[in-house]
Amino acid sequence: MSAAGSNLAAAHAEVKAEITRTDTKTGLLLAFVGAVLAGAWSVARDLPLNLAAYLAGGLGLTLLVSAAGLLLRSTRPNLRGRHGFPLWATLTAEEISTTVSGGNLAADVAGLSRLAVRKFTALRRAVDLTMVGGALLITAVLFALGGAA
Picture 1: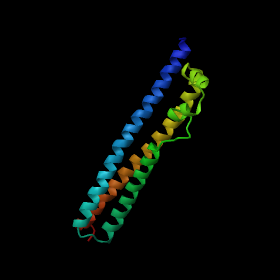
Picture 2: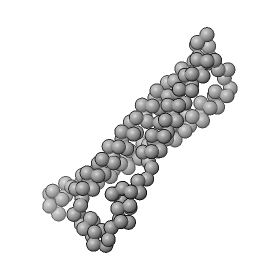
Picture 3: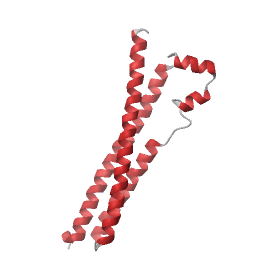
Picture 4: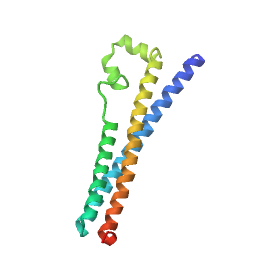
């Protein structure tokens, strides 16, 4: 394999590894958001809530649900995609041989890189929404406990 081919294969492996890392982080954050939503629901049932607590808590829950939606969208399979299993299912035996031999590796790296950036951007936005939503839930608890008398 030439140096360029070796570098291209390394770039391909790096992009695929980054997608895997992003998907792992997404799954963990989705579980965390679900746990926070369940915990917030349990706590809210037991606290006497005032208007300020309702507003802050409602906005916090809305942001957390939005974050969960972003995370789910990020992990949603793209069956029309040009990479991975859907690609193999659309190719002839000859086209698969060409793809496997590295004929389209540069195009695959470019496509996977765009996919990785979209996933990473959605994850970053979900993290931001989770942090703001969590802060609003903490504010709601403080309001409920007498901080906004």
